[in-house]
Every structure is written in C-alpha cells, then in structure tokens.
Length: 473
Image (cartoon, rainbow, N blue to C red; front, side, top):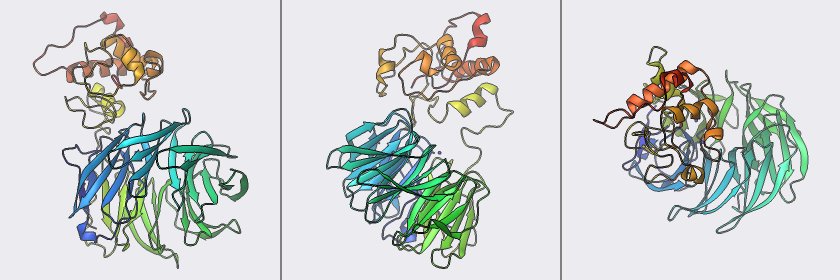
C-alpha cells in the first residue's frame, strides 16, 4: 500500500464519518498522500470527476475546497458558515456545492469565492448525510429528526419541498434512484424505505433489516442497493423483491462507510473495526482487505481505475490506500494516541482537556483552524472577546469575564445554561475533582508566556465547583 499526501497551504494538520469519493483521471502515483488542513476530524471527502479538485467536510465547522495538481493539493476556499460539525459535502456542477451539518442546516455554496449562497435550518437535530439527484436539481438530507428533507436546488437558493416521514428513529442515509424519482432512506429503526420524490409519499418498506442501517449505496442500473448495518452486516438488496440478493462478509463492529467504484465493478465497506473489504461487484468475491488498528473507517472511495481508495476515521487527515497492485509493505497512516486520547497516568487536568476540549480548542495563540477559538490567555478575557473569531451572537451579547468560577460554572451547569443560545456542544463534567483538575490545568496552560497567572476569583472552598472546556467558543 502506498499513501499520498494532500497538503493545505499554511494550514495545520487536522482530524469523526469521511465519505470517500471517486477521484478523476489522475494515475495513482499522481495523488498526494493525505488531505491535511482541517482543524478537526474530517467527516467526508469528495473528489471532482476530473480529479483536479476535492471537497472535504470536518468537525471543525468548515468545508474545504482543494485544488490538486502534480501530486499536491492547496486550499482554494475554506467554506465557513455552519455552526457545528459539517458531516457531508458534495459537488454540484462546476462551481457549486451543498453541505449538511450537526447544526441541522443545509447550505448551498459558491465555490468560486467560498460564499454561502443559501442556508436552511431545520432545528436542533443533526443532518448526517446528503444525496444529490443525477440531474443536480434535488437534494435529500438524512436527519436525526426521524425524517429526510427534500430540496429543490436553484442557481443561488435551496427551496424546501417535503419531509420524508415514516421512520421510527434517526435517518442516517439517503440515496436517489438513477431517474431521481425515488428516494431511499436507511434508519436506526432497522428499515430501508422508498419515497416518491414528487410528493414525499411513502411508497413501501424496501427491507426490514432489524438492526440500524447506517449507510446506503445504489448499485449498477439502480435495481440493487448495498447497505451497512450497526450489527456489522454488509448486504445487497434486490429492490424489486425486497430480499437480500447477496450477503457479504460481516464486520465485527458497525459498518460506517460504503463506496462504489465509478465503473460499478467494485464495492468497498469500512467498519468500526478498522477493516476495509473490497469486493468484485459481479461475482461478489472478496478481492482485498485492509486493517487500520487505530480506529474506525468512516468513509471510503475509489479512484477511476480502482487502484486507489481513500479512507478516514479518527485521524486528522484522509489517507490513500493503493489496492492494486498491493504493496509488500503497507505502513498504517494513522497514529496513536491522538491528541484526544491520552494515557490514564497523565495529569488529570491535561487528560480532561485532551478528551473534552482539544478537538475544538488549542492552548497556543494559533487556533489551528479548530472549531473554537484558542484558549490562550483566556483567564481575565471578556466572553466573546478574542479579536477575529466569528462568535455566535449570544456570546457577543454576554457580559462576563472568563475566570475560574465562570469556567467552572460552564462545565458544572453546561453551556446551554451559562451561555444559552451559543453553538457550544452541551458537555458537562459533574465530578468535582475532575473539574478542579481541568480548571487548574487550564490556568497553567493558557497563561501567556511570561505573564503571571490570572488572579483567583473565588475562595478555596469554591474550587470543587470549578470546571472547564469549550471555554470560549
């Protein structure tokens, strides 16, 4: 296996679901090793058909448009506008893109200048994945409000059409039929259903798998549908009969990614067990396997010649794996431990920061493109007061200073109580000793070089109420 690196100009190396996509006509040797440039886990990646551009979505609240040339990639546009993790992003023609995120929003982008043309918020439930009709006129978004949302796509706007309802739990995956008239959905309730695109009517339950359905991919002429389940199942459904046409090798953990090659001859599955299976889509023979021992595979995609697949998981980057011909030595592109995976013997405050804060925040003056601003110099800083960071309006209107007590309160009661209306994820740290350790660590680690620590703002008796994290986003 060989890996190539996609480097973002002047950006820091970055890290939850990458959707791996089909690359263009480039040869394997012309692909960089990785996509690096996000400030959080990369959750999806799609390549343009000609292979000269890539589109990635990340936990850092951003999507990135990459330009690829001579085995290198540079950041062409950073798409900023979501208020939570961006879970999926897809190209729409030459100069448009659509994205969905944990903020329950779907956005339309102009890729020529990176501006957001339109955005629709559906509420607090996250939108997990996205599908576009072949003619580019419609988008379907899988939502955790137990439905899928259907939109008409115009040059500069998204028009909400209907909600596809009928599932009893979160909808995780969506797919369009080749003619765009039918939308297939997969849900945590264990069912795959078919809906009419025209009016949103539930047509039928295609297959009652029982276990949750995480991912869907249409195969060939649209008469078969591959799916992956929470029980590790990978199977192909005959859409007319509603029965399993082929049961493939199971994963030991939930299936998180599926990819179909551009020519339809290959299917790949990736699971929470870190394994990738590649199949011949005609004979269904298992062609190749790969294992990343350091975490799950969230997304997969083939190159046009089926020689290379891109995959990603917990890492701050997307790796490339050369499937054919296989390399005699295949170094794993992941590293362990990651910044949010520290050993139990570490300083307890540092451990809590790594687990609860480090995906969104740094301790240095540079925010490294992470979702939240740097915590450097936070003690004594007015809430929403770091120049240049795009704070939510709620934080801009808040009127208090970050100190031991207010940071403690943030973790004790939660950001929904201390800073209501902000985009901070709701995380609490209820153990008093862990909160104390985190606040103490933050006070040491965020003090500007050469500056004395910020003054204590409450008595020692209050320290058990301290907490910290997300402390300025």
